[in-house]
Amino acid sequence: MSEPADVADAGIATLVPSRRDPRAAILDEIIPAGAPWLGIVCRGQTFRIVDLEGNQAVDTLFFNAGNSEERYSAPDTICSQGNLYLTTGTQLLSNEGNVMLTIVADTCGRHDTLGGACSAESNTVRYAIEKRNMHSCRDNFLLALTRAGVGMTKRDLPPNINFFMNVPVTPRGALTFADGISAAGRYVEMHAEMDVIVLISNCPQLNNPCNAYNPTPVRVMVWAVD
Ligand SMILES: [Zn+2]
Image (cartoon, rainbow, N blue to C red; front, side, top):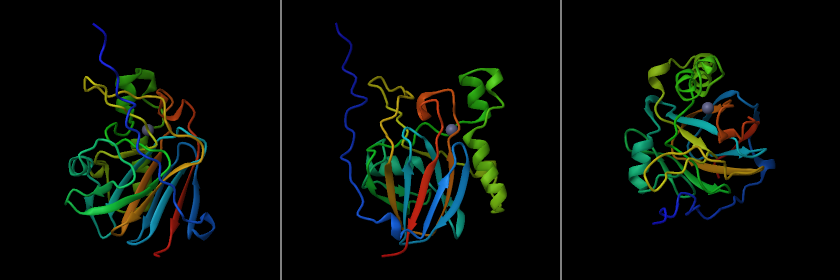
């Protein structure tokens, strides 16, 4: 008897480009490979992340800028849309059930919110004890929060989004860190439905294919309210 067909890579969403002109962006910054970034996107503004060189995981969290107790919720987002992957049309929900942002354009087609962020602990358990001191997303998140002085700590880090990361669920229900489906210049764009703090770790991971074993820079852009 043959193995069941692996449908993990089926169902990549239809790609939806944006009409926005990069020259009109009011914020346009590069996040270097492996670096953290923190910024604020206001209600009505549009936020884009560009995978400049391809196959770069961008670990991301959102917090209500007026009340950081309200933050991105992976389980609420997944349950609400009845789909494990994020793409155009996905409403990113908070732990209070409010829509924080809506994905309005996506030229990658699939983003993960199950794989979590790499950390000293996961590097040690998954790879080797000598990987413990490697640069990780969790450390990046904490560094950015500390620099920003927003009063958040380890306990304020819920499960995150991994933009551009391909973590297919197999027919047997397992998670796999697979080669990326993104490529140079692909982007995801979101419309903010409330003022949000955006917390990013441009993943420095070297031990699995999430960054094609080669972390690279990404570009973040914001457009004013239409
Ligand atoms: Zn990472």
